[in-house]
Image 1: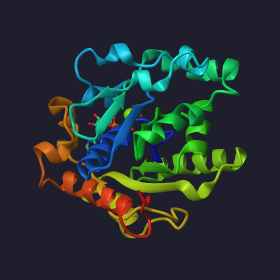
Image 2: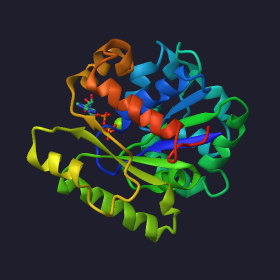
Image 3: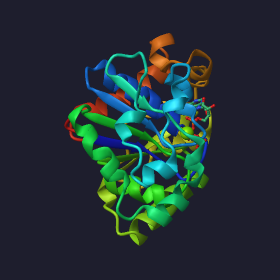
Image 4: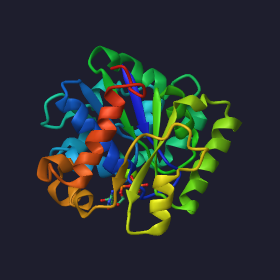
Length: 252
Ligand SMILES: Nc1ncnc2c1ncn2[C@@H]1O[C@H](COP(=O)(O)OP(=O)(O)OP(=O)(O)O)[C@@H](O)[C@H]1O
Ligand SMILES: [Mg+2]
């Protein structure tokens, strides 16, 4: 089982949109996939959850104390090969819970039994550098970091690098990719064409700024379902292809 996390300290940069599209593309490729919504905002749950599935969402306190087996919180999405662990508002306090009880019961342990049923777990993370983020960074095989091509958003990459160094994490699992890129903007074009050297493992291509991605909220579907030939659908397919084939692949 491989674990891929979408994370950035910065909010609203396309983590959830990418997590949803990549999870759906993986499932369609026949890979048994579990999407876990770790963000109490519940955006990825909104895209995929069937009515009433929120009742199954894991409560942070019970999970951390080992009282809820994670398997009991999984719900089907209605898409073949794609299941979901929905978000719960209690995840707002998960860092407090982890601080109090979490040393022996970590995200890695919760995920471990899932290897029997899933080949891929996709984690949609909240925008923070927290105890939970540290656990995500430890357990993930790959951390995909959406970056808007601006200097300010590169600052969030630098902050992440500092956090990785501080916590002595494996920096080789962090892969940035461009997101919300608008080629009409000179700076975006310049950064796409000549990426800063510190973005060593930059994924190929970029996710364009596109209203089709915003429409996912209305359609509650991955973008390639309702706009299969759109630039956004093509971009997510390219990102998925890089994860599933070639030298940057996850070897699923
Ligand atoms: N490529 C894109 N083009 C246009 N709009 C986008 C794109 N990606 C995401 N959006 C829109 O921007 C908003 C934020 O996107 P998303 O929820 O994916 O970001 P996020 O990084 O997960 O945010 P948060 O930090 O709040 O979890 C949403 O309304 C989404 O529809
Ligand atoms: Mg999000």
